[in-house]
Image 1 (tube, rainbow, N blue to C red):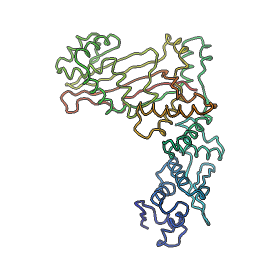
Image 2 (image 1 turned 180 degrees about the vertical axis):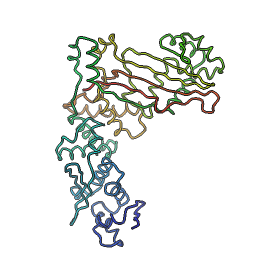
Image 3 (image 1 turned 90 degrees about the horizontal axis):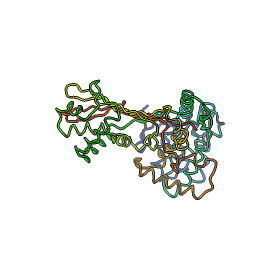
Length: 427
């Protein structure tokens, strides 16, 4: 049986017949005949794609179906909004639009949605009652559906706050008092490992290369050479597995390159490369773009093979015995897993354009303005909108580049081996 296409939306004929409670193919439009009183004739073009997402699109996630169903409810006339109901039973979620006669219903496995929320927010919805799951879905759906304008911001703001106040998995929360009571460094390090969380942020190869070229363009050879000369003693540099400890030895290795190409390599070898790397995410990352205050160790390896250079840059900051006092003193400024989850949730749903530092600062200012009109609640500053916490606990920056001076595309970066791994405290 061939599918039917209504307003550029392809819908299986058999499903339309079944859901429209019709008896023959010629009555497919009876589906809309049943819907139009709820939505109004002018909304037909909006409604049918949403119906397709909820009822027919097997590839759509439960989050997408939730958002589509919530949107249908918002479009419906005031007298019909109560016709739209979720229900959760065991591992199934049911979307129901009630009519005179049989409702339009569709069941879907809700467990992937539970897993998504657990990974994104450390909230275990499997421990919730059905009513609590539905309340959560209503708030979560508001984040994706409600527009970021002054008219609707308050409603979206309230939903966001409600989600952040949901109980999270509370295993192994970091306590500075417990940390300070521990005697040996080895035990303190073990405590940190158990009471922190690791994350990975992948860099954008395209943005990284663009940023490197832009930085080279803004500099000059003598200044860049002088900076590398100072920095080369601060890290371990190897060229074809042999240590390089001074600028003259490095220049001798690069003597076959012209000055512009040497500048590109010098750009990768000075300490200024790390802010360039931190600005090379596909979109601004408010957490991974920060820095750890711990002792750092930089290693750079250059492998040259027939005029092609593989350059691996690594900067690792992990807790050493000399950092114990630093961790104790700065613990209130170290970011937490809650900061990670809440900041990413806020940037995901409250910024319409491409996320940048400026756009992120702007939406946080809007949040501050809204919170200033209210009494503080139990969430308080746990959502770090004041940016009181701004440090990573540990971090590991790794970048792998290929430099081919005689190729059209001289510089490339590995998309799998160019990343920042970092550790945050559990809260």
